[in-house]
Image (cartoon, rainbow, N blue to C red; front, side, top):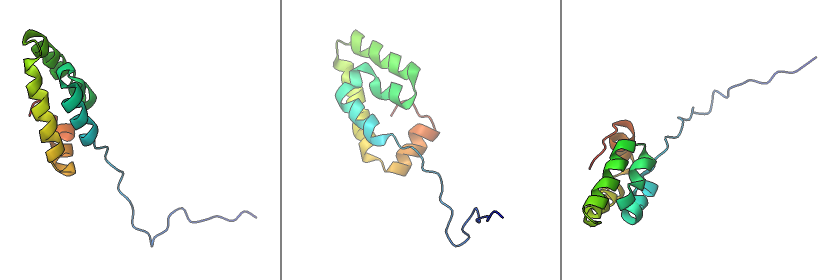
Length: 94
């Protein structure tokens, strides 16, 4: 005779699945490789990434200030605010 175990423990609270927060990696990419739009591609913004590369080429690198500012903004935001703004809300710029 086979014993069955309960599949759920009713005394333990159910855990919510962890949301993947890309804040730190995106912020570092923006600060270090921002002119190449790597942070945009990492967050799933392909069109914005291509635009960032074009801006950097046209301005001979001066357009690299935009991703530097974005990187600072990414890192200053709270984890939840970053997640809601850039991963759920899909805000492409600033």
